[in-house]
Length: 390
Ligand SMILES: *Cc1c(COP(=O)(O)O)cnc(C)c1O
Image (cartoon, rainbow, N blue to C red; front, side, top):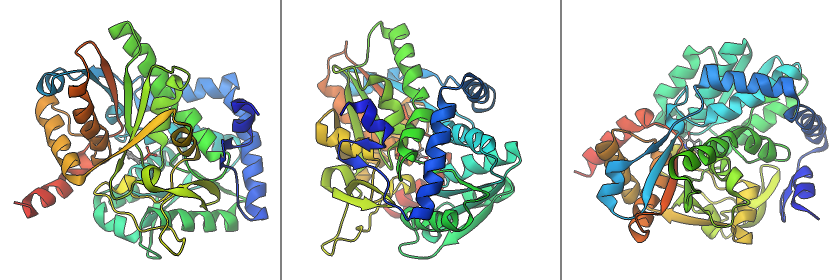
């Protein structure tokens, strides 16, 4: 079976698919059919491109990090600036794509899950602009860690539901959002925020996030006259990474490197299992239940991973590595001080690995780091951590 056929069925090697109750499968079948119909529709794409330009602010720059490169010695580091997007991260790319689809499918109500709050804010923002009713599910623990983002979503007119079940984290918020969809699918569109979930979500989210590497490929060729030696992105569910990798997947000389927190190392330590209606590598405990994860970056705190990353890991096309909280905090400060860019804690994982890789490369080699978001939301948390640790 060719890759294309597998993708159409929502499989990436053995991963992906759709393992949901029949009533939900009906909704997903319609969604898959509508997505297939619109993704190559010129009017749909023109509208998508219009909002990316006029509302999100694309194309995002590819900035040469000169002082960081000099400080580290070795390969040249470029930053793909998703932090400069409206609402502060890559999440808005996918939100615009899916909300345009929701509109065309006649939905009046949008629901979403959120971890760090970035996807919730992006969804609430787009719902405000398009005049859609909006409900955001967020783990109770995350509402505490990201209280300002909760208020931001409310300010934008969304209803935020704090989920107290389980660990009160992203995984639990996804469970609640899926329950809502099963009950209300007739008027409701579930706007999923990462490259996870049952088919067609991983394929659809990749499609809308692929604009990142579509741009970066063109930009690096303009600036360096060649492809990068490595592309580095942090991995939570995997949407910024798959968007950053997409247009390089068929370029075998470009190393693709996903970075995870060492305490949520799904791709490094996970085993094949079904979670949230799809098959991927999952961190399980000895009883076979999803294992509690921990990350200082709420957006990376998820025990599953996108099915395509699971496949890229098993096939060896992409590499997945881990970094520690200490390395992340160091990278967070180093990028701030050398480049005047405060990264999201999630993105600081990618920066942290670039700091390890760059010195091993020669000065004519090039690394593209996907800077998935800006760090304003994390400044208070980092302040507390650095103060507590002296
Ligand atoms: C949500 C988020 C992530 C993690 O999600 P992915 O789907 O893995 O990209 C990474 N960075 C930022 C800034 C985020 O908001």
